[in-house]
Image 1: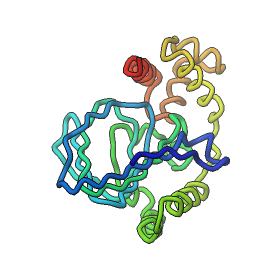
Image 2: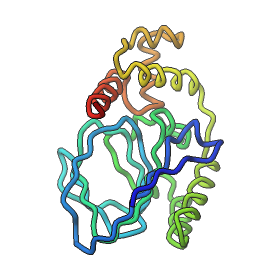
Image 3: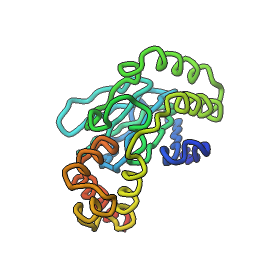
Image 4: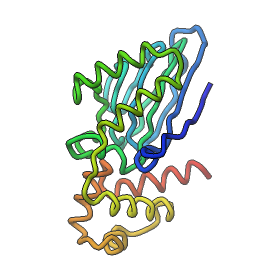
Length: 216
């Protein structure tokens, strides 16, 4: 079962959607699926059997129950196990930075247990999620957690506009043109964009172009 759920109104500027995956295959692990960079950071909660991950340059590992996944620049292989249950909070490209007190670029190519970043809050959230009886309750808890952590970041609107320009052009736009549109010098734009999105503009452009090719 796959389900896409929209976020509550106050979070729509920051979160693309919630993606729910449930399987009931009664096998140890399903065949691997290759997942390519999508240009979005995610927060993932596992409430079913564990899933195996293998990145391009790492050995295979089992993810923790509640994990924050920064922007990725390489593919990874995912293998779901028997009775899978997971909720992916898919941030908008510029969204994840508004929930943490550090630049999103620090999460680049990292999958970290949420408790490594916000220990007590993560433990409390994980406990509430495991004690929930359905995904509607789980998403309510997730949204309350995110709303409490929401930070109004300087230059958010500029980066939001830049991301829209890139997505609308399907990645076929020059960095210099975007910087000019948002009234920033090229170096300043690259720094601000990287801190909010977690990727430099050129890499984000290439991911958007690649994703558009995959969808053709």
